[in-house]
Image 1 (tube, rainbow, N blue to C red):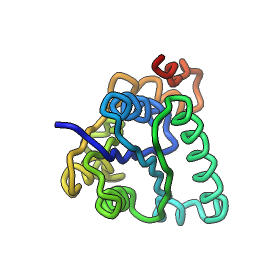
Image 2 (tube, rainbow, N blue to C red):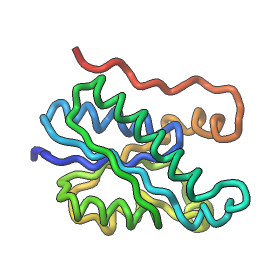
Image 3 (cartoon, one colour):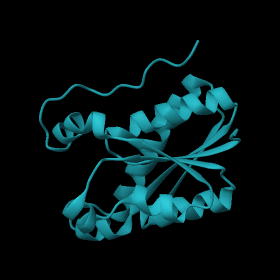
Image 4 (spheres, one colour):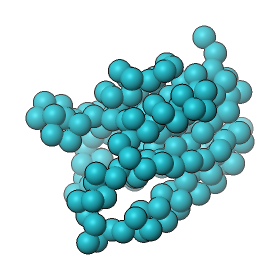
Length: 165
């Protein structure tokens, strides 16, 4: 099976760089186009409304996409970039449908049980509602580093490896 259009769903977690790296490697091998997509979660935004405005969230989202645009250029990956607002799982599926993606690459932080029930699972939603194949990048190997990063502890930085020669 080959892929021509890969939708890469990124968020602001440290796992996102690893998700992008895996998608970029696959895109380079398949000579595929990528769309790097970030969703501003409107339900979480309303929780932090006094601290984080919509304008600030959009600005941060655009900065994040610019960072990945630079990474795509370094990899010589044909990519475009977009962001949406709403429930991330649904937005990822809608974007992949509208763009005609034949693969979605999404990360999974490894929440389970009560945590997944309370906060939901974007990757689980995407797997069950996507109009195309889905590659889920497990964060379990990175969970200690991710948890440390989320809680402000010192941690080993997850860096995007050098682009292929």
